[in-house]
Length: 282
Image (tube, rainbow, N blue to C red):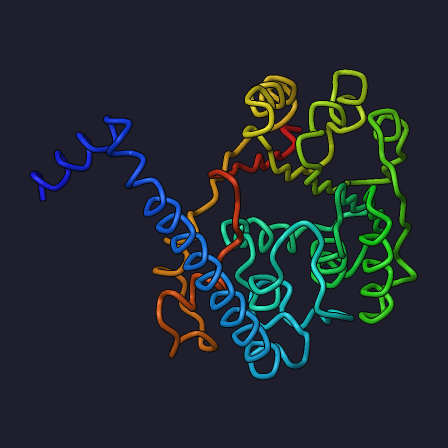
């Protein structure tokens, strides 16, 4: 093999040798590209078949099957900004489930979900907490429409206000009647939403903020400094998709191999993510 490699190196280094080898190199390149296309088509077809199988069997009722939002009804097989399988299975952001359980023991007068997507957290929290008015915000009109449909399907529309934009000034002027809860996933816009001007209005609020340091590495540090005197801060890190496939155990996935479990549990995050859980000091 080493001799063949040396021979090819000598031939391609020589203009005459390259003249004879070039057609074969082009043919090899063509064969390689075609092979990749064939494999890609096979993968797409396999994923489509698996997709239909999941929806026909595990998720045929479009309800969340496990976790704190168990029973949450989806109006369609659509998710905005994140993968659908973990949400319907109930494993989505399982790293936060203990926090959500603890929040269920607190009475909140207002719940703000900044970056609500199709409504997984907004509607899920309205069912989990049962009381408090909910403000669901998202700049994506399709997301807000899905969130409205989900609220209606789960019979909580009377508690909701929907808003397509929510700024730092809105947060400064928002009237919390008692104790507020803020869930924020705004794709790197965190430093624009939370600032010293609205901090005073948040002193009695619980906050759960997903930080996007892969977009701006200073976000987490900025928020920790901002809330350091008003809140106790806990940092939670996300689990890699491979570890989710190996560790998560659900009745619905017991018979699946690891490859299939990774498709079901995978949240396809671009990096290990962090959440800041903020509890008022006083």
